[in-house]
Length: 431
Image 1 (cartoon, one colour):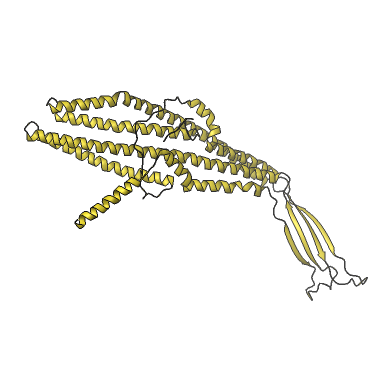
Image 2 (tube, helix red, strand yellow):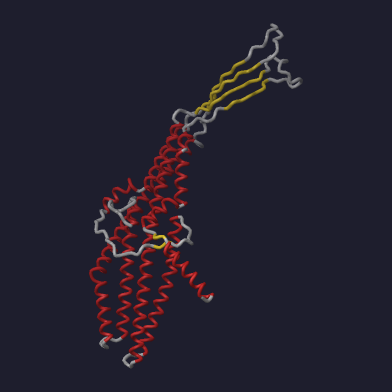
């Protein structure tokens, strides 16, 4: 066997082996991979875990302070026995905030920890949505490429028919040229779709945490059941305040802002510091010739919040403004979420209607028209231009049908995410 044939055979076997071992990436598998391997989702989980450790820290007292002092040490001798007041003092002090402050700090940290947890859940929800959208885009592109290649084969057959009729004097040269032109357009369409598919696959691979160099093939799609279940938009809007993690996170931030106002109000009250010390003395008292007794000290200090007009008043005003901002942000988010629900529900209704229209009318009519045109052309009752137009019309109809199938599922993904649900339907068992 010649060398070049061996090389070709080797590459062919490698290609066949690679294709046979290519993993079929179903939608459920894509979702599972995204939830397990997406690094950004892992980062949000770690952030939530980090925030969960904050309440205990905020509720704890500050570390006590241990001090060691040499008091009244004479500088002429630095002797610890020369003077009666010289002592080596060991002290311990503890800062004590005004009652209620630690509890409020803990409440703030607790609300922020729950907000971080909800934010992680929100990211998970959006990750599922984006994974589904990109998977269905990829599924449509695979189907579109399959349709393009199938139509290329049909056009090649039409080219052969046109060439045969031209050679026998029953056809026109322009029919051959027209068929070749449309075939070239389909080849260009295939290249365009392949470029889009590569970009869409790269986005999907980034979401599921897989290297872009790994080939993952989607299973061949068949016309699937499209749910006709009515979507209660009003119910979704009523429930969304309790189901959408983003809104729950923002509500926690509103509650944290309220706790910050209460903490700012506590700023009008003093903080304390309690301490005790023991002084060790050495030597003999010259007056009575006895050993000098040790000293003990107890102290209580407190802050004096007397600059309230510049500090406490301003801080309370700041915290109230922050709470108002958080409330307005929450309401704005609610309005936006409700608008997203309306938009996705509308897109879903339109896409469902389009699919039904294609299945019940447009697709059968397009196929019947093409079959009729082909039969008529073969007996010289239909001109070649009308035959090509009919074939291209059927091709475009198939493409649009699968696009609507994809749009139905993308709208479902967007609506589920907007409503704060993993799945739009309780019995959702998509593959």
